[in-house]
Image (cartoon, rainbow, N blue to C red; front, side):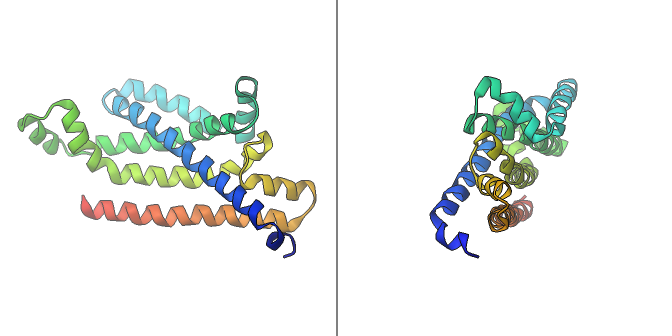
Length: 205
């Protein structure tokens, strides 16, 4: 290990960029998925259409999707954020809708009997009970995006993919290993943390 000890600031900067890019993408995707999910949970036909669209986006190769965004957004962070957020939608949407539809009917009837409005029932009953599945979706989406985000280096999106790409261009195995190992560690860390959060929410429910 000759390169890594001499380039700690560069490695830390790339790791931070990767973290911000991944978390920001999932947060953007979550906001969109919550809005669509609340609508889709009550409208099966609309859900089928949205699920088809998000499914098509999900199967597009990441590099191809980023390339399609370049004419409109150019190079850099913007197309990376849009592309990664798009990849989150299928995973997050499914879990939001499944969670909302899984709320027992008798609980909803009890809320109606207590005089809850539709908004109060959603915020106080449905979303809290659906939270374990929503967190599960966030976990899967974030782990997926952390891996896919390495491809953003091809469009100057930054992150650990930049180090991996430099290693490939320079045939420098150490750079490839550093970028790959840090990406794997980041994904594993969030997988463990969110898994524990999911279990805690299930016990609470």
